[in-house]
Length: 594
Image (tube, rainbow, N blue to C red; front, side):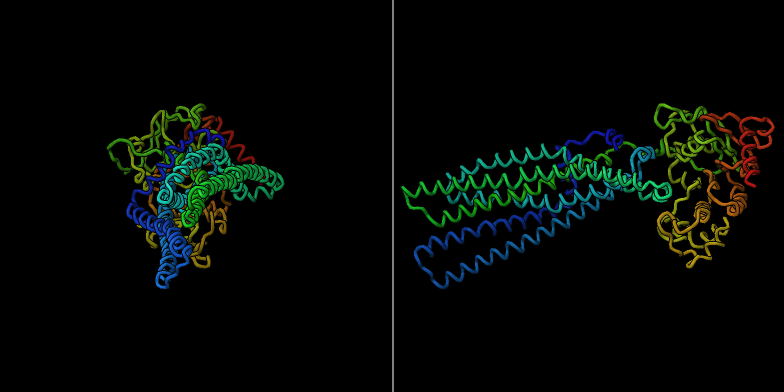
């Protein structure tokens, strides 16, 4: 989290709020309608004390109660109350629908951005942090649009209406009350400055909490098998306690700067108003209706102020959350894309690496001057110890990371010139750890590709010898698959991933230790399918078990990011180099296990 936080500067709040308001632009009509209803509700609300003043001054004090007028005054007052309530309900409903639409758009925009980001971003950013930003932070922004924004607009409109009514009653006293405005603004500014750092820390700790929770749930088998429950419980408790402490500090600030402070100011102003009318009563008659109306307006003046201050808490959370969301939206890290105006196609599948060097961190090279050629229909196997750079070659060929030194050519065209669609349709990738999505077997083979019908799914499954176990499932190809395919064995998941790859009929096949996690029986079935899969296709195969790539046309031996040996299986054995040692170790291991 710290590394991820240090990568970006927080967006100033002065830019954040206007940017959030920009999301209202597509909904101008709804905003105008909501504001019009809000103004009408404010007018009916402000006019209510005027009716009470008229009743007191013209009828109550003179003890004059004409029946018709009393009835109409009562009907008028109740009508204003009911109309105000209905208008407020309607405008709040409009604001909340508007807020839901905006947050839906923001979440889709945020999710789309995440889909297009470079894998290097996910390498350094915990999954829980991203989940927190897409869910918790957008939810805080929703609260801002749903309650804070509508409340601020409503209460500011109410304050303006109340000030106009107060000036109509007594201009001198109303002018005196204007002093309250800079005091209230000062309290809000002070609250923002004091609470903003606390909210930043609060959201950061909540993201850490989500990250730790995500890590713990994903690694539960390891936690239980290695008896790490106590350690994880302690770490989670420490993060949770830090989050509790920062929220408690927020509660303390709210308790001091929000309602209690405003109540003190209100009482002081009320004493001032009552004192003004009391002193005035010695020299002139005091209009009781005016006094009632003024005190009522004063109470109503502080009510919207208190409402706004209460919602400053949500406003600050929303601003901090928006900064965190915009950090992702403004992140320049993007997955490599097509460069140039040319649009080459992959027809033969010739792969050529020319003096390619690569570093993940910009300091240490994991690949050094890699050069080789895989001609159409050939199988090139890449072997080496852990950390030698095998998977990095696949990452570059799949254009998961940008190529900064050297170049990769496919059918003579630079890799960077191809569109993503062309690369993904013509290059099939099978990973060591197959990932299955929630759904059924068919949907995991099709993966939303409309060009793959049920007939192609059946043929692909039969081709990789997955049909035998799929047809034994309770619902066969419609059998439900849970998260990450947990209900299937590793071998079954791998066979489905093979069928998924074959369904697109790729020209180039990339296997990243595709048989490393399967049992011997399943491996034999896969190897049998691979013989057919590789026919007529260029294949780049990263292998841990050397027995699986003995028939490769070319074997590259990597050591510390460099190709130290190359040749066929027999040629490499005859040289008695690193490949020979690896082969003897595996053979010896096999003999011992046998």
